[in-house]
Length: 114
Length: 111
Image (cartoon, rainbow over all chains, first blue to last red; front, side, top):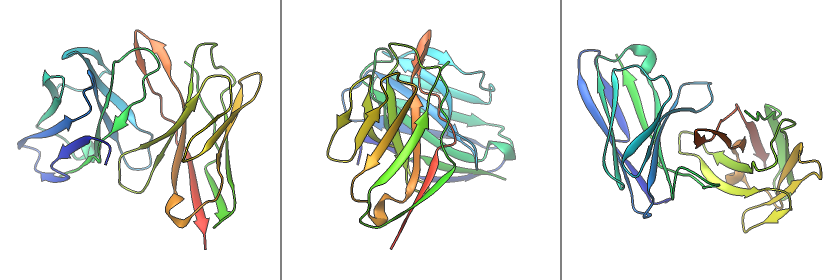
């Protein structure tokens, strides 16, 4: 238990569906991150939020839309996804997105797009 | 960006020390080395990090060479539950600080 929770843990969706992934951290951190891990590939950073402001978008397609209403919650809204978007989506948090900050990861949401 | 190179896989006998190497020859002077591990289908778990000096905590020891171009993670008494993919990461700074994950080392601890 790292203090970072993600829901749902598993999700199956069709290409025309809209769904949202939720991440919550109970660590009092100010930075939150979304990563994508496809099969047999390294983790890829998608988005970074620092004090609720997006500070990095790593060329992510617009069918992925993040939202950070406060420092404890992070959402990833999904719409019109493709089968190649099937992956493990990981959320992480750190005290700040700067300095030598250790990131703590949630358990991930395993997404399957049909 | 500093990049890391790790062997794709290693085996270790249960109860023995597991020594996982990492090369990071382009590391900059102010960049730390982090180690994480990922047990199948779970989120990465933080293990340890360091800058220049060797570090030890309850999970592992980190040995960094004097020139900082390589490091070794040591699990002193490996157990079956240590079977995982181990990632050596050098955190880079390019506007926003971020980790660049490689493909890691798949450690298998054998009974």
